Length: 433
Image 1 (cartoon, rainbow, N blue to C red):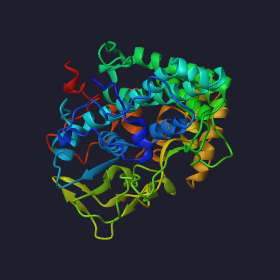
Image 2 (cartoon, rainbow, N blue to C red; image 1 turned 180 degrees about the vertical axis):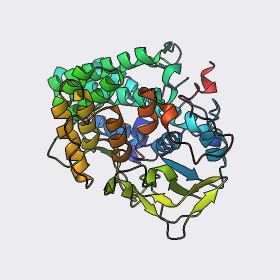
Image 3 (spheres, one colour; image 1 turned 120 degrees about the vertical axis):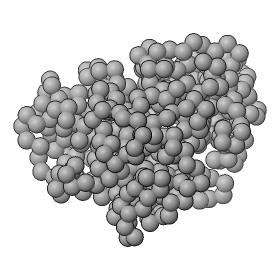
Image 4 (cartoon, one colour; image 1 turned 90 degrees about the horizontal axis):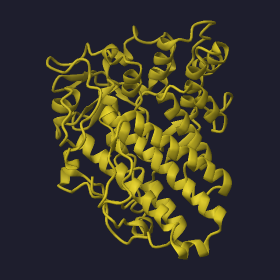
């Protein structure tokens, strides 16, 4: 993928959130936004603008990516009468290398990676090194590598075994595609080096995530370590994250939105009882009493429609997705609830008592009783993650990593929809693969 040499850093911040989406629907390329580069050096006044711009751009097309992952995981349907592809392509399992379902999130995540790379490049400039101390440069580098790792992981989760390019700093000399396992190793390396740099240099400003960059780094590290099957690394990372067994399960790292000026709105929000021109309805199995434990209030993330069932192209639902109650609600990148689930999974075999304690905290918040000794196993982890992390982009990935995509209930699919659901997206055709 060719990503431009010049990125709109300063323009992004002057009008925060005005970053253009690299939308192939509109005929644009994957080359990312273009404007003045700061690769030749960065000043103190520019640094907070660049940092804020990177955080802002992390929001671009996250709504598309979350919707795509949720449809594949049979968490909910996206009903858009103006775009039948949500049913004819995505829900049907016909994943194309020319579809905006992969191309748009892919482009935006790499655009943010490019911004991080330009920031990293600016740190090598003599002018930068005369302005900032060694520790300050370490802090900036730690921030950039942490965000870069997160964005690369977001792409990798979509294309899986097809792999990704992790070395894209030089658009005229792109690195090769790395396999899934190799890319995870590279991402882990970025996270570990980022954490070391932040530990040495401290935090950069601004930070609108809601947790420190160090804590965010270690939280994402725990997620990656779990994908690698490294339970010891999961637990070590969680110890330095914001995990809190007695804290708010919703505490964590968030992307923020507002209706002010030219800022972005949360496009994952959809009003209750919306028509088929733009509704999101829970996959019927999610709200089936046979699927969840009686009294589990987490099922209330889907709310019964007052008008009853709504259908479009054979995709039907009686409950609206109700994770976000307004178009300025923040979108969680990783929450305390997920960290407790990772803690439980990492302890499941070696220290079952700790696993049960973590699961019990989550169940209590969901209106359920204790899980009981000896009852935390893979099935338990899958159930708790399904209802705790509904609509947050995990179920498809979880069922894939457990080798259980065939266990995703597709009883409410249409005739002809692929079963089991596909495991990965193809590499976008723009990559020339």
